[in-house]
Image 1 (tube, protein in one colour):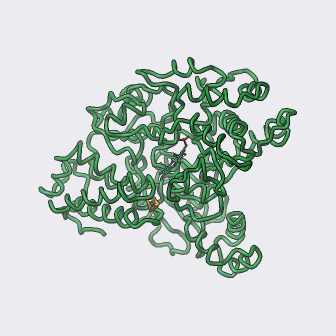
Image 2 (cartoon, rainbow, N blue to C red):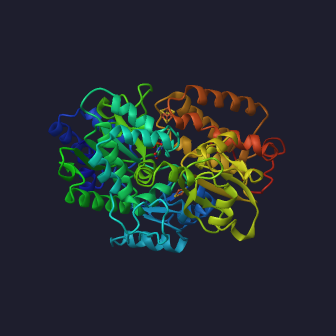
Image 3 (cartoon, rainbow, N blue to C red):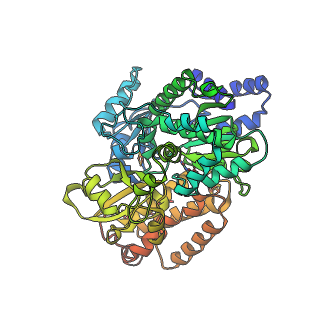
Length: 559
Ligand SMILES: Cc1cc2nc3c(=O)[nH]c(=O)nc-3n(C[C@H](O)[C@H](O)[C@H](O)COP(=O)(O)O)c2cc1C
Ligand code: SF4
Ligand code: FES
């Protein structure tokens, strides 16, 4: 596998020396241009020697709200006298620790709630050649309604289904529950599994998408840590029901602690005969392995993820065909989110009526949401689907910091755009949020207090999409950059009315011609603030003023 070889070289040399790539090409018979194409695509691989210490401050929404810009500026100032080959200070995209913002990464070790003093001490530790400490995991201490096995034997749903072998019955139950995919798009899981089951051919795959890289999205991290057995049980059930004999659990490389938890659980399953050939003494087979993502938000898009599993650049495929027909190695593939798989044993153990009764206001099931930004108690919460947003923000997350008023919230990171405080009673479910002009997405609630500038927040979110665009299609690659340029100009008092027309054209081009959801939703943060906070945005363009006093306004336009 190309990534294993690249990782082995990088771990030996600290980067990927040209002669080592040539030797790898000869050894593996993989053309050098392909190896380069792959190594060059993923930010995790270095083609040049990296500095001794590379510190990256997460610059995305939740960290932006919790002091990341000042932290980065302060650290740059502190280490400016050091040579670039010793210390490099810069920014990175969301590290999956949005509830512990600001998050930083130092030589691939991740830390939460970083202060300037702690960050400085860690840099000096790394410079001195000492080992960096590991981020301690934070085990959950409250009982979870999503756990169908509190104090009882686990994998009960799997044991039952193996006895009856009623695979169609499982699909019928999932369809009756209406379990939507919980990775964002909401496609009905029972239908997805049925399509793969009915697809012809003996070779099929199951994939769990644990890439979770959109700013604010942290709920899968919690599920992987606290309910890993449910995710694995859901994947084995998917394999047996669809006829797939092999599964990949695709996890972002920053989730090392969760990877270890999952690997221990997988090892236990093999030892107990729940995985492998001859599951529980039958002729049933399902092999499961963890695939560590080489990096990047785009890897979470299902077809890009599949390309990565195949050892290629994670560039989304044109669809159709969808993965249910042509997925991993062009074979039918049941690909679901972590939380979707975790729901399957719950439904099979507790029944469809129980599942439906967990929701509120006409919605079904339980939902894990992450809340970050300007709240007193950021974290991951298990809530009934359909709970009003106000309950989540004021009850679960403890309300707004420093007794401030709520100004806006993103129901699901940058893709969902921002809604104003007046809409805080919206229910958290697919239908209600779509009706509000937003989306439930991955349940990544990011909260903005009074005093935040919504142009600054829109620029931050669009910049994330610009940074993470894979560049495969021109409208997304160029359009997201153009949008960042225009918004940056507005924050510097360089806007004009004519920009609005250009923004409308860009928005249409991105929505209509981008291959994947990243490009299609890149306009959402800006469109939403133009809809809900127009006077505030226009003040920047027409009066050259930032009403909240956040934007630089008089400085030179930065392109
Ligand atoms: C740019 C982009 C990133 C995505 N990232 C994730 C992700 O990290 N996790 C995830 O489950 N789905 C992600 N998705 C959605 C997946 O493409 C896919 O719809 C989902 O994994 C299917 O699982 P589900 O049906 O259980 O929701 C992403 C989509 C896009 C366009
Ligand atoms: S829309 Fe953007 S991220 Fe998606 S395939 Fe095109 S360039 Fe890549
Ligand atoms: S860790 Fe910074 S936004 Fe997620």
